[in-house]
Length: 504
Image (tube, rainbow, N blue to C red; front, side, top):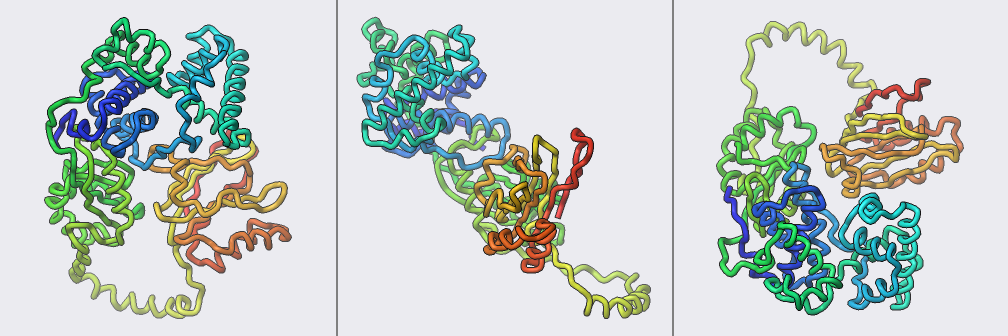
């Protein structure tokens, strides 16, 4: 893997975008408690710019830089790589004069909240300590800012009075970070004639503080004039089925030390490294150690570069999503994997053949005429921990499975979460599984490959039953034999007792 810095991403963006992203990346690293070393700054900035479309304006690039810098830190820490939302939660781009209108006539407490909390990204407790303002006054100031922001947005034709506090806070954050026009050349940012501008421009104010604090130098804000290397890579991603996790170590040995694990069952590597690992991977499948229908992979090309074991840019996400869209047993560049070799005959089978035939004769009638149990097509592993008036449920289920969560509360049976697939990423713990709180004591998790279309009808029909949950289980499993069903355990008298896990 090649490690580099200041790649040709600098040639794709204007100097203003380059400098604004540099300032925001350095500021975010500092606020996250990271020492801003030159290599760290270069890697984080490259990750942001590699993940940023060309032609973007500086304000939007700066907004995205905060989220992408935090994603970069997650990759460095070895957290699972997932697609993050990069659109503004307010879904509105503020007008250039909104910051002036919002800041006009503010009292000192409102001004501190606007600059420190919404602008610099401090926590409200940090603002309370650094500005020596009590929490009650800060809460009043924050409500005043929200009211003013709603007034400004509504005067421009938006229905901002219908927005909740989280959405209006997103908008205030965008407004608070709008840069003033006419930012000076980075090399002149500390000059006396630039001081008045830096006092009112959030971007330049942060740049001055970072430079005076020794975190940046003015030259860091200038894009490099020389291009070191190409910033396009070709990588492969391998996805292992959760049912085959028992052979994960053997798969890692087959892939080689160059493969980087970026999720519980996902590895990425260069295309050349994947090709080199091909024979060992095919041998693993051919020997029957790894079923071929439990592995798939894709090769993609896109922007990025390696920095040690960390792959920068958006291409890892594209590779993982492409791999998950491939049929099981297919890996790009390796074709369809072979079936396992037939097992060699064992001499002992002749000794047990006669006994086996007699036993088989005794059971053949039962297994022919008796009920047949079908295994779930999307198994669930779940642990239930009693929480306040409900359960904290930690679970794992196949990536493509559809999850429904139902409960029986005081008002009867209800659907708590419906047809959850990609959206369950919001419940991810960072350790390869998920955690969700359900405020009911009688809860069931249901997993299928395609969902249960008539679930709402079943819920309604169970409302008149004496035991709704038992009725639902019998009805669902009768109509959908391969459904996975895990129900919360009986309530213990000791509220602090741990609850055993459930798997189905």
